[in-house]
Amino acid sequence: MRLATWNVNSVKARLPRLLPWLEQTKPDVLCVQETKVAADAFPAAEVAELGYATAHHGEGRWNGVALLSRVGLDDVRRGFDGDPGWAGEPGGDEALFDEPRREARAVSALCGGVRVWSVYVPNGRTPESAHYGYKLTWLGALRAAVAADLAAGERVAVCGDYNVAPADSDVFDPAAFAGSTHVTGPERDAVAALLATGLSDIVPKPMKGPNPFTYWDYRAGMFHQDKGMRIDLVFASPAIADAVSDAYIDREARKGKGPSDHAPVVINFDI
DNA sequence: ATGTCGAAGCGTCTTCGA
Image (cartoon, rainbow, N blue to C red; front, side):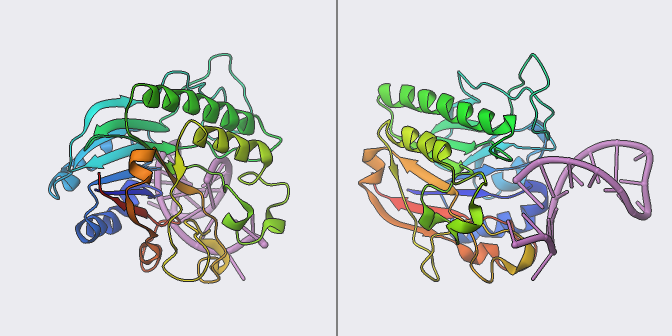
């Protein structure tokens, strides 16, 4: 089975890159993040022509996650129990409202015998913002939901944009991130706690250079200088992790005309 | 490392988030 995850930064804008990539790479399952389209606006017909069924969880301007599968797509779950929701404006960093609203940041389904999750973890903005607290709480709730899947005996792969670099080696210069989100102790602890439910971090090999980065800012030639981060992660339960035959970052997809700022992570395994 | 990109609003620019 070939499983991939890709933050496409708008599925509408990225369709001219996504469709050829699917044809070339032929993943069995692709986890997509930041679709940025309403629930019914995912280009499902276009990917269906390539043999993929779609489960999309979307809300419009922000967020949005999807699963594309050609090996089955059963028991689809949009969101998860315990999701705390965000009590602010969709784009703001302050909590303003009494009633948090759940955002389209997680979808899971059974694909080829695996409970596959596509997740888009809240950014956190700054460590001082309410959004940062939301990020930590959200990760804690995700941990509980994934633990329930494992307790139910499912094989599990939690894939997506975690907006956390697990280690200093996952950023181009730790000093440049002092005081920033993505590298703080509490964020790394929350990700470690998710792993501690019984998952392994499948670290992909970079196809060029020493750094396993999956994201490079569009600005300032960051990609060409390889000033990136590893924030797109695949966490897999033992039956999968022990069966991985290959794992790589498709940096070719970050090149050329109209790329996403994230590259796909692809893993192959035999179960 | 703040150099770009994408969405949305009533908009052919501005604002915001990432």
